[in-house]
Image 1 (tube, one colour):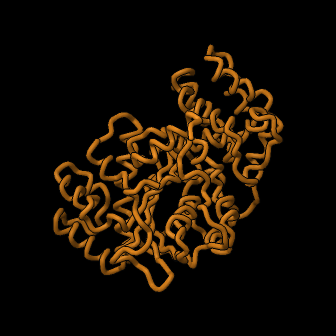
Image 2 (tube, one colour):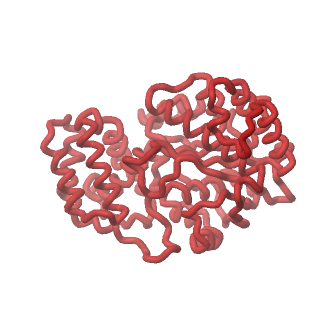
Image 3 (cartoon, helix red, strand yellow):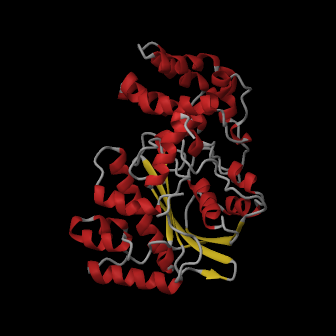
Length: 384
């Protein structure tokens, strides 16, 4: 992790009691398992370690500076150009959340391409395919295939065909369409002239038919962890991030339809780090991208689980309101950067909050801390 990354412990004003940290979380850009063709291309999940009193002061100071009559303040207030100075104060090194917060970013298209690689992994690497919930594929050849498809797919096949292909795969995993529809979309790609590096991966689709049902098969019932929804993995990442120094972590989260009582119970029952990472359905995507955070599991062993996960209305807890500010701002800044219209000043201010476990297909992105970008470049080049 870069030296300028938020530190999860030892910060004045954090919500820490003994060895317990209570972290307030909220998201922006959540559309369930719909990763393509929705309203957003980036998902952001923020965690804030402020005490209730410090968060209330932050919210009140934000209101004092913006002076809007709105009952509830949202990220959109901060993102207005006339309030640029307020946003810079909030994110800046002398601001109230610096060192007390983190953001987990997900490029939705890259997440979906990573799932696609899971389907193909047996054909690409020569290894037997495994179910989606069987753990991440760590073969570097599969990781390289994901990066090639993500980087070149739209340019090689054209936006319309590429998006149709990804949407058909998204619908396959969501059990909205039969496997045959996905393979028809894959055949449309195969009929397009493509560089050998891309054509070989797409050709593997023809041999992947027997594995398609693995992506549709999941436990029935409300307690089943969604395969594609990035929300639950992000909560797991928050626990791992803030608890990596041995602290017990309790999560206070804004209410969300995906956080059913059954799923909350399932999350709080998990005990082993490896089980947490597997249930999160991360599929090793941080590793596939060469992100130096590597696997979701930190470099220590032992049992860890959320000490609690409590859902609240954001208006009732100022810590969740601050997390909502950060998540909304982060999603907009990251989406602009992803689409080539990034604001250098805001990217620089956001960078210290972004976790290495973020699922981001461009390892050279300015959103990553500088040291992380250097390590990622060496990893992708195969250099020590």
